[in-house]
Length: 535
Image (cartoon, rainbow, N blue to C red; front, side):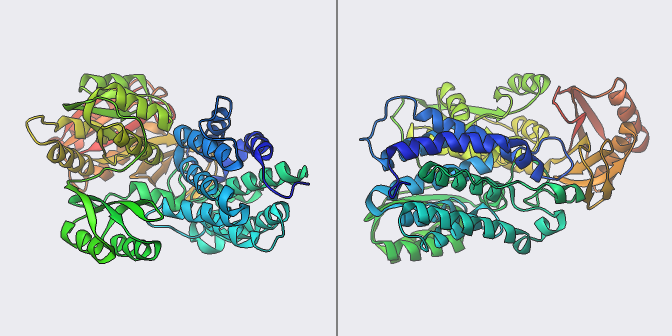
């Protein structure tokens, strides 16, 4: 049994973590019990940890130490992060790496939990964050690294079991938090790396079949509840404020609290004496006054909307050129986006893949549109990395390709970039989105209980209709959306759409809503026979 975490143990941990999450990949996916077929917490976490392990295969830049190896893991995880679970896990590893050499493993677990919380603008208890904090607190009961990790594992398991008590959506679904379960597996792999003891949790899915919302209370996909709030809640703040400040940790804590009350997208990095601050606010003056109360801000930048900070070697993008990068699944959707002048990324891209697409444009100003709420954290991380490369990136929160098309339709290079981003964001927000799919499991939704094979229609992520005939449900969905207004309907048919669907829906709208214009395209997207946008 090792008394101290060393380089060899960190390398063993990396491999064991990949193997452990790999064994439970599908079980973690199924903890997202919302009845659509693309829940993927397990897959995203596995891909993130695999990227962390691959980072250890090449030469390490830093001197050989446990912290140096962990930093390489964290960097690999960051660049390969997929979904919110991946982003949070990468941040947790980064906090661990920054403290383990100087302070030891127990304080490093504290730092890791704090780092994970710091990545989330509005932390919510009953998530992976709660499990990380409980593990760190429990680690103080152990003497030596091995016993500390053993205590941390037990504390994490107990906190995981309590997550349904903290989030009503978990209790309603009869499950624990999927991201928290993933962190428990990660800690169990660390214990095995230190002691050689294989004591792995069983992911109990028995209760998941009772249905309800996914393990995070979101519609579908890999959504850590707090993380999703951090990256997907767009409140339209007017200004981005950035500055450097020389001050101490207590003053920074007060500044962080003050800025958190003023706005969102708050990032404070650096220390122990010099810090970089970034926040989105409606009142830039109040943000600067908060900085003055904490010290003397300098290198002050005030612009519109979003941006962030990151490390990286400077590139030479054209500061006058603009580009738009959009994520999309479906050949037809990609063709539509390219025709509108965007760069399209298919599939479920990693941070590195989104970053490569941003940098490949050669533009100094890039708008990024993630067309799935599960990709917003990944796109935001890529935006932060691109900032360090000299590229100004704005992530426009979109949840569907139809919203991306609405945003692209109002682009105007005659406007200032920041004003163009605002116009695109407003157009996307004005486009109500919906999708139709087939239920993959039984679940209790706001529209009633659905069973495998039922046709379900989701509006803005919530199930609104359940039926047994695709055309009927799609027609009812259009009626429900148009009842609250609309002049233009966009239909994107998926790879599984039957022949005649567009013709039937176009005729239905013409008969029931004669003054509404319908545009229909073949999107080719998987899982969803129909995507709908109403403007």
